[in-house]
Length: 162
Image 1 (tube, helix red, strand yellow):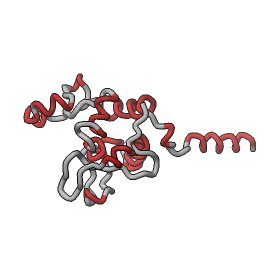
Image 2 (spheres, rainbow, N blue to C red; image 1 turned 90 degrees about the vertical axis):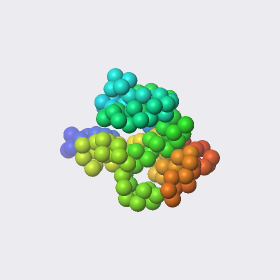
Image 3 (spheres, helix red, strand yellow; image 1 turned 135 degrees about the vertical axis):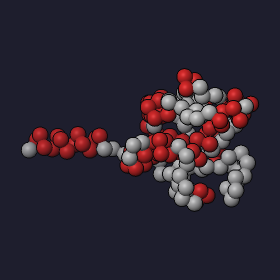
Image 4 (cartoon, rainbow, N blue to C red; image 1 turned 60 degrees about the vertical axis):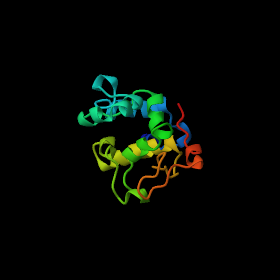
């Protein structure tokens, strides 16, 4: 009986939900990016910084399987609330944001092997960016179709603990 109770308790500890305050770049996001994104988003893969990309967009758009660098905290932050605000969120979004009308971002499919794994990883990323249960925004610096530009209030919601 005691062993059964211990097994149930151990399972409960493993299944604890993500707590936004506990999600950090170093412990959660960097390992996820290394596992899921390194093939296309590191210097070894030929990935440029956003500055390099913007200087020669045509060159990098022609290369298959190369995206902006995601190998450091600073490179990721540029895509969240820096010069390419919202790009990270737009690419990883699952399509539930009203502005995208059900169309998932082009990198969502790489968040895991199964729908459940992708949903779990997206939940961790969202908790890191804006906090658990809060809606992240996909807005960029300028207006994109029906989507308005990012607001100062939206930028203030970004948490991204190192």
